[in-house]
Image (cartoon, rainbow, N blue to C red; front, side):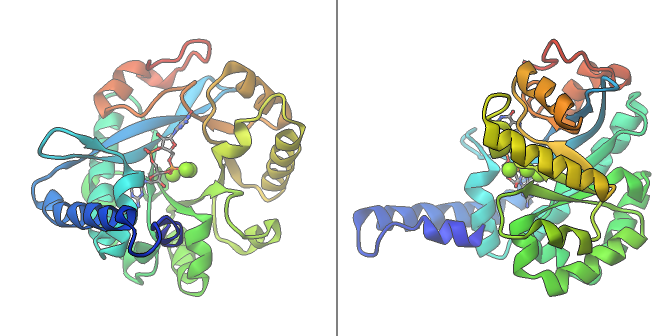
Amino acid sequence: NLVSFSANVPGANSEARQSFLMKRMTIEGALHKALERSEFFLDYQPIGDPAAGRIVAVEALIRWRRCNGEIVRPDEFIPVAEEAGLISHIDEWVVRRACADLAAMHRAGLTDLRVSVNMAAPEFMRQTLPADLLAVTRAAGIEPEHLCLELTERMMMTQADTIIPVMHALRRQGFRISLDDFGTGYSSLARLKILPITSVKIDRSFIRGLPGDMHDRAIVRAMLELASDMRLAIVAEGVETLEQMEALAELGDPLIQGYLLGKPASPEQIVSAYSRRAWQPQVSAIA
Ligand code: C2E
Ligand code: MG
Ligand code: MG
Ligand code: MG
């Protein structure tokens, strides 16, 4: 993320660069205060099992409501938070909030639902992460198996030597780990087998071309075959149409996430849209 963010910096001395830097400094200053003022909130997007017609998990996605009411999406401020060294504070807030919300969703009838949380590399480099997360899940009253940590392929590869041992320790405690945006990084498929992960999320850029694009079909089929050989669960991201879902069912029947199933929504909306986790794929539950 840091790399792609820096790559976006407009050329030196240009007016564009000046206003870019101004904007970043403004966001950075405001981010410092955002945690204290509780300006962050989480939306949850369902992950479903089409064969069973049920949702199995929700992914927590952070949003920032600024004091002027504007809602800022994570792609705009997460890279800044990473550069400013604030990402760990944010990720720690997210995981506590998500575990508390999951416990409430369990009590509201969505029993056994799991929650996925996105984590940046600095969190995954901390030796104390497994113990800290155990304390968080215990306090919330959920099991480690209910919490899945999503880590992008790109982040993993930059600090693999430090991160992989922490991943093993997390697995020993029962936490799930998912490799996010799979296919967009530089790792080879072969590397997958040395990673202590429980699932892989196929990036939505490969789903977009389904069902028509022959290349996307071939890539997705290969990914699904490999994941199932390795006994990894697989989630297809960004599924927007019934045709895409049907193509996926034919190619290997992964779990799906995307606007077809539901857009990110509040815990209350999740509870009322998916009572007892049932889901009707023909109608998008949340518009
Ligand atoms: P991600 O983890 O790959 O999350 C999926 C993103 O795709 C979300 O965008 C979601 O709203 C969007 N999406 C889901 N279904 C569809 C679809 O059918 N079509 C399209 N066009 N888009 C879809 P969002 O919420 O803007 O999040 C962007 C990224 O920000 C996330 O990508 C994740 O990498 C990062 N992020 C989000 N929350 C957190 C957080 O709490 N901590 C950290 N470190 N990163 C976060
Ligand atoms: Mg994710
Ligand atoms: Mg993703
Ligand atoms: Mg993504």
